[in-house]
Length: 234
Image (cartoon, rainbow, N blue to C red; front, top):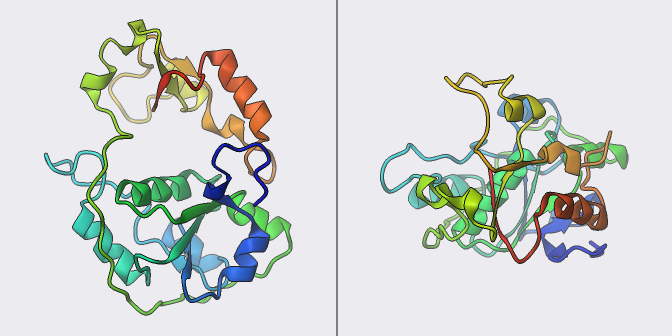
């Protein structure tokens, strides 16, 4: 993909690249939507993700996500090996594909990309779709050590609003930000001192590709989200 001004353009790819490489032995395209959506229509040759959020069970060793051994087991059953290039996509604006990409990165699998625009872009480009429930040949996968460098807990957030070098960025919906939508919790609202920009507002419509990086940077700078600051999203 051309960089278009992205700092890390290697994290994104296009439907053209996927169409050319989906049949490569060392490329695995992963559909990260729910299984029923995958079964209805997906990119030919794509495998279904075995999870949507890749969350752990909340025990002391697994606070931020799925256990490494479980993750490796899932990836192996998806036909993914350590040397494979992984392309993640969904039909949900990229939210679930990004979660999968983030989990891969936490366990050291850096050779992974997101399909910009996901299934929306694939369809908009007039590319074929499939209903075949593709069952890949299992592979052996070994997860690296869990890297929690990009995660934070409550202790990391306490006092952050008073630190000029820290930004708390609330990426939820407007209703969640105001507290009107409690999403089943006892209390609605936001972390005091946080700034707000819903993640969907960084996408084009109706094909939900990322907006140009210059536009995104301008939006974020207006909120005080700048490269020299530590940014925590939630």
